[in-house]
Length: 280
Image 1 (spheres, rainbow, N blue to C red):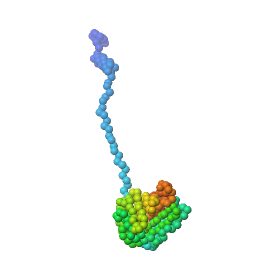
Image 2 (image 1 turned 90 degrees about the vertical axis):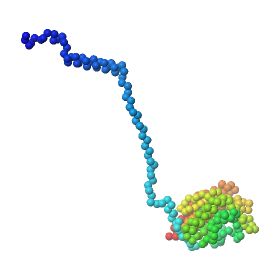
Image 3 (image 1 turned 120 degrees about the vertical axis):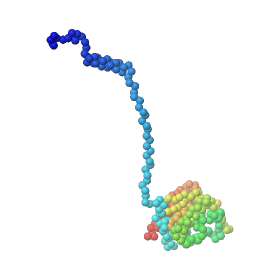
Image 4 (image 1 turned 180 degrees about the vertical axis):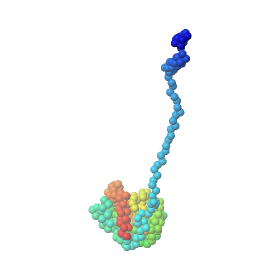
């Protein structure tokens, strides 16, 4: 037998390689059929946790200045020659108080009014409210008063001079406590009519120096006179002032003729700053 002659039945039997590719084809057809009949369900994953981030509030920059730093002039020391510089002038009244127009005249001049309750023998009822009238409980180192007015306005200032700023601070603290505790008090004068003051709660004045302001009503000889009263601490002095309106019948209109508590307090504060600057 020569090698060129094929053996019997060779073309009739598939080879092993042919069987392998036939098997792959059958598996592929089966896989496609399965995907068409039932697609893959989506893959479930663990939920992503939610993270909450709290951002802290900005922290203020540190400051080298204490919030309780005393204002300029808080340790100023006045004497009898420099304290009169704390009195408001007629020009300042004309500029800041509507009722001062067209002009004001001086009603009380320096040295005319002594410290304490006048006339002699007068008392305050209740007695614990006496400092609300006299500012200090005992005669100060120095005292003076001035007043300006016209037919519709009366503006009075009193200056109490203490030995030093520490003594003035103590006296001012006592004064504020007394004012807070005395919403109404009267001055009883021997043999003549007295006066009664009804005061609204004091509010803190705005400005460089510690101060309080309150709306008041003076009842005297059958009349009720609205106004404002304030007290201010400047160095070794306490400056007190009273503004009363005698013009319009309406209380609101009368108070409006004085300006308001803030503008009056600002006028007194400005005068005090000028007085402190003049000390050098």
